[in-house]
Image (cartoon, rainbow over all chains, first blue to last red):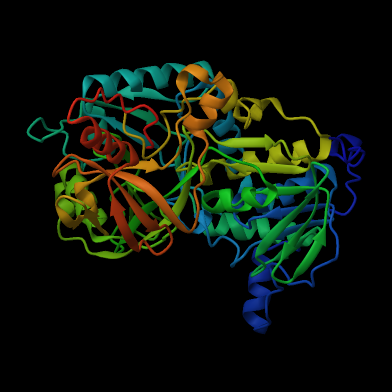
Amino acid sequence: MRLFNNRNGSENGHRMNGYRKPARYSALDLIRHGISGSDWPRAWHAHDLRPSYDVVIVGGGVHGLATAYYLAREHGITNVAVLDKGYIGSGGSGRNTAIIRSNYLTPEGVRFYDRSVKLYETLSADLNFNAMFAQRGHLTLAHNDSSLRTMHWRAEVNKLEGIDSEVIGPDEIKRLVPYMDTSESVRYPILGALYHPPGGIIRHDAVVWGYARGVDACGAHIHQNTEVTGIDVAGGRVRGVRTSRGDIATPIVVNCTAGWSTLISDMAGVKMPISTFPLQAAVTEPVRPFLDPVIVSGTLHVYVSQTDRGELVFGASVDPFTSYSMRGSLDFTEGLAGHVLELMPSLAKMRVLRQWAGLCDMTPDFSPIMGTTPVAGFLIDVGWGTYGFKAGPVSGETMAELIATGKTPELIAPFGLDRFEKGDLMGEKGAAAVGH
Amino acid sequence: MILLPCPYCGSRNASEFRYVGELSERPDPNATGAKEWRAFMYVRVNPADWTAETWFHRAGCRQHFVVERHTVTNEVQTSRLPAAQLRDREDERATGGNVASDSGGATY
């Protein structure tokens, strides 16, 4: 499937047709606008729906927007529409706990997520939009021997791939997190942890907005509040999409809708091994900074970090049954509070401000599903479960390469849809919300 | 949490149960190829609609039963015993109590 001849890529030097860098934000601009009181230019614009586009991306979260961005910047493909049934970033991209890391279990997973970490490291500069990536370190606690064994396993796999990751003991954990209870007089004493210094947290909304601004600047269209209601397939290939604002003719449709992905794939007649489970999260009142690294405990099913604003953000496991509801439940907060207080008892008086949920498209092996499908022109970037946000940049980069060149990049080759019928599952137990 | 109507114990909080999965027809393991078997194991419908699914009463009567639930609103409609159990009961009544129940073709 080769629809573009890739003569506009970055290898041809600086002539990338159609890509214009967005008007730069700068300190001088800040002063100018501050003094004159003038409005800032809009970061992205609304457009009428064109009758046809070269590529239609369904889903305006970090994956969809990053794909459109790299299509324009790396491959000069700008006749692209990104559709979202709500506002951009209203799905998983706006509901995650914003943790970035690459200390996964499988070598394929590690390589993939590390490419994302590298992209995140320069993202604010590349997008000229402050994504507030704070690489404060990431700790995955081990509370029993089998957990500790898995941490050692992950550390060795990480080191082989050149990633900073090592197992540390309770004393060093205590030095990194003074408020942590590393004593033995708890129900699940901490035996050690996997310490990953390049991990950290980011402002997830800013990543969406930064990519959206970049996408808009190069002439691609972002259509919010535009719901896809059908996909036209004829002769085994995609012909167009039907939306709530009109029909679009297109040879390529990319499914970047995560929790809703089976609903979109159904429209194209593609079956997938995905179940949608809600993943809840909660945030506390802001307090003074006391927690530097991100703390994850597989045994206690909890992860916690402190944002730059001082709020604690908590997450735990996916809800135990499928649902498309994005509401929180009381038993989640109760269970979570119990586990967090076992880790850091001094937080007992902190107040929870709000809770919510996002939808996780869970696959049987906790690895994503990326690439082509039996329907020509219908591409998928789904199966993101509880680990989608951290993979945004690398997914956009690789899906853009697939769309532009017609060849599946090596980085995502292990994640094809056909691995399920072949039995080549990519069991990634280093994924979040997966107890191990 | 939502309430589920266990046919034996009545309406209980969902935390007492274990969600088993969507109902799907299991193909005969002796007459299926690997591809078809893997499709049965992995492919899901995952609707945003009414769906029939199996739950297990983990903290109660420890029986499986089937529920009709709307996955968006979490409304629960009916519950019934799994088809295999209903078949076994029929067989038991018909043969006077001696049935080699193999749960073949169980729908889970």
